[in-house]
Length: 286
Ligand SMILES: [Zn+2]
Image (cartoon, rainbow, N blue to C red):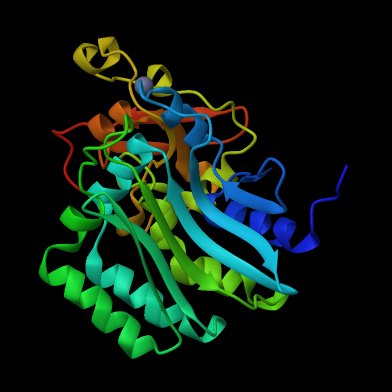
């Protein structure tokens, strides 16, 4: 068995750091290529009736001509593509390309347009951007992520952006940081852990399930509402009001209970203590 290259582990660490939990790497069958992704993607993928086993999404690493290449790839995965498409922001995308330009000699984007495989490949960053802007004129997302009329995968097709073609171990975190939005766009909704990564880390010792039933004086209507959505770290005192990311200010809530109680909680918690309640509306603001 071939040992996973060290730089792949570095990429996994950098992605884990951003996620606030462990990312994974998967070797592509019969190829010296590795995907770095969130295990959650395979659950999303399972929800897709037209799923294929060879779907790809996330960061892709491979060695080519003795150089380390890093790409961001989406392929054969209509469900992930639909999330990506909904979250996609052209200006942010453009800025990622500019921000990572120094890590590659040649710019490269592979995509499908009008059901045809296309690629833009040029060493000149301005030329690259001009070509993208040209597609943008015809609505980038609509064109690049159009419904594919051929094949049974519907929308999906193939999308691959080169981020680095001579990746240095020391630049891994920087590139992940600069391109992180691409990864975040692979989630069904704008994920909260963008700002909650450190809170989630603080909550690691607490069992990862919705703690809404432990909150005191929660209205019956909310209490009776079944959990829904992913379990996420929630601040007792919101971050925007100065709440910390420490364990004492956090609890696990499902997405729905998080939404229903956001900004309405007070109290504190520890490993074995849980003193959290819904703020009494009649109380004067302290
Ligand atoms: Zn819940």
